[in-house]
Length: 404
Image (cartoon, rainbow, N blue to C red):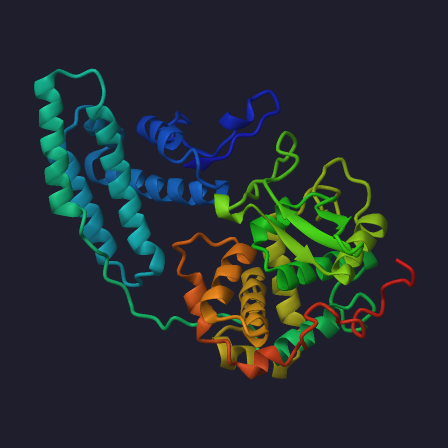
């Protein structure tokens, strides 16, 4: 089972999620693999990969017995490992509903076995033993490395929200709106700040939850004008963060500084001063109980928002995206479409615009995400929600006290 053990006396590096068997003992080779092969991954990605490895362990236990997978890896029993891998591949291939993650389950299981065997091949074995392991690794690659789980073809649909949905969200989540689905003012402001930061700054959910209360900085430029920016970095309070799904920055490219409008900066300042409270942690988004807000709470928040949308707005959402609920990542997609529209409207070439997008959204040089947005840049229904001043929604933000 996948377990996240947290204790303040344990060093942070050892508080990572780990796999344990039914007796509560660590799965040996999974622990080794986790330490050596997943150390640089974001916590959420590491948790997902360990979940895939755990599924492989459970399958092997049903097939060849408890502890057999670890034993066969230790003995470099290529015949048994080959049988287990082949059976696992067939079991995944025969599932009635093959999802996009099914291929990742297979690839992760195969890479887990391969990488541990490769690591063993560099251990203190005799030359003949090393040559035998290398030969068996080559055979393993030839037999299984190119296997692909067949999956249903799906359209590469861009999950940007239609203009009517975005407009409805602005109006409903205004803290002064009578249609706001949240009960008290603190909850209304929390939901509103989450909405604004996800939509206007294009943040991932984990990046939002990792923000510190002072994440927005300010200074003066060469012309004496005040400028604001948002620092997207690793979470500031790792020593006391006990969330089950600890937020993390996805890749090294995701650590970045984003320009922020004065209006957005003032909104965040208003939330921090008057509605965040004074919790014993450094994170920006605070729960009702005074603890850092969790990823699961973000999901529930958007479920509540989706339920409160008018029927005609939900129909527009379903017609456009095929969905009946809104997620945090939908707002990031929408932000990307709007930003790309703006960059092209100011006469940037497509190549230059996409390079700027990579920096703003924290995509690597090899990421295919910018291409997915290029086809949506002429979607006027999305661009019509904003004029060129993307962040200046002053009329809707009338609840902001004067003078802040």
